[in-house]
Length: 335
Image (cartoon, rainbow, N blue to C red; front, side, top):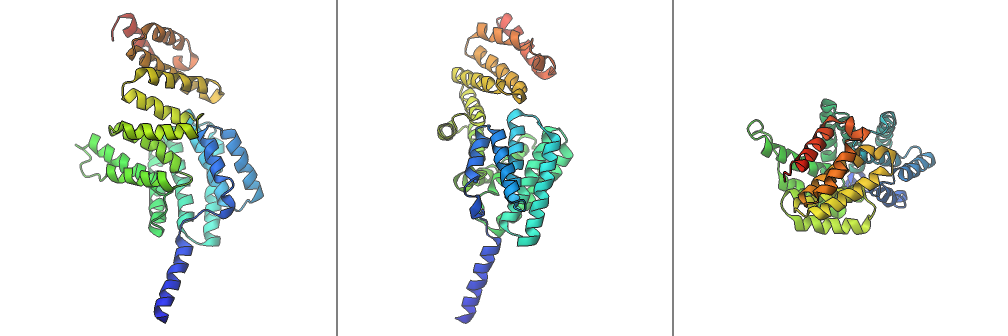
């Protein structure tokens, strides 16, 4: 009996050391920051993070959240808004996580924070088209997040990037099977991890739902996408991230009228902020395509003509050529 009690005590202590949980003091701000990220209120989210960092400079979580805000801002605008600010924030976050691990020990929580930092850092290199560092950081992130999951199997936060990786590498294998027949990957496993993350994770749960919206659409399960889109739209009515999923969903089911409405709303939203110039043009180009598919060629033609006078489009060879081809098709009466 005494031996059993000792074993149970050791298990309880081990669970306390390695299990995943957020600090109680972060309960008041985690949800608010996630909400502001989803509603593209990046300046407000950064202001809260900076205030938290000043209040408790040794706590790594606010710095990791700040890095997430900056990273999601880059995703929203499809470009790096502030390279120097991102690198500075990353270095500070990693240093604080390292010091936290020295002070508190290795845990599923600390491994998750480190893994999230590395994963966000990998997306930074993707945006600047530096693919080798992106791969290196990405694999480091996955290793850390898997270690976090091994320390606590209930850690749903780690499932976000692990699930995306499983799904993406399976997709890569299916598309390039002739040279990557040896490359492992399991789409179902990736979806299961993302679904678990969407149900249980506080920080990455909504991101998992957004990813699942696109994956369900890709997997020909539109009813699942629509269910999630309606849920997210109700919760985050101003979210451009949700609008993107909505536009892709309607485009996939060939409801071009509603797809056009979503792209138009996106373009108007991006036009309100200086950093949104590029995506405002991208979504107007998508709007023109949807209008053509919906038979509204005259309206699409006017949009194309305006786009070809837009400095952003003029300086983007790919978008300019696509808009020129679309306008030529309209004028030639092609469908």
